[in-house]
Length: 146
Image: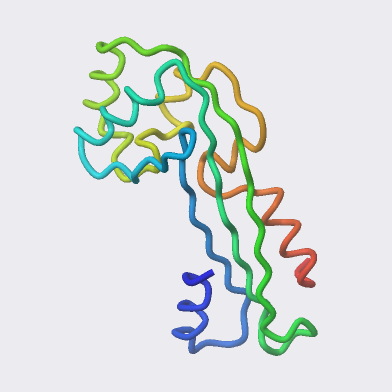
């Protein structure tokens, strides 16, 4: 919500839809970091190994000020459950070396090599990638876009 409002304040062009999203990975009550380095990727994967976690993405949409919605903010949250296989130290090391998990919530990118680590997924795949597409399309339609 803050990202969308900040973008709205900075926008100087013609009236437009403003969309913002943030994704977190939760293991129980623990929110895993957006892994910024090899050590954080390794730590996240060790925690996720052999366990089920949740991926949550909050999506915020602000309708154009000149629309019938008049700048109204709409928000939704997508929840996806992901079960990981038990990972060996060698699998984790190879993944860390790829650097693919750096900059990713929970230290992995399901759309890449880490998809091989996924045992089961319940919910939106695109949510785990970072933007739940069906939820986003629904928000846009509800706000009068397309």
